[in-house]
Length: 66
Image (cartoon, rainbow, N blue to C red; front, top):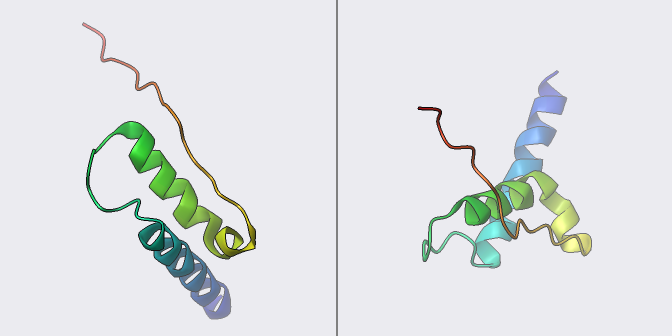
């Protein structure tokens, strides 16, 4: 269990580094698409360095009911 947890943390840290290197976390425009792109980049982890470039172009957030 400890090895799996350690691997997961390392995986996510590598993804976070990739998101920072790509400039996704600069904070220019906070939007749903920007947050989604950061999230999928972090989840992709080391795959970012193998050519995976996940991006969320648009997202539709449901509006609350009246």
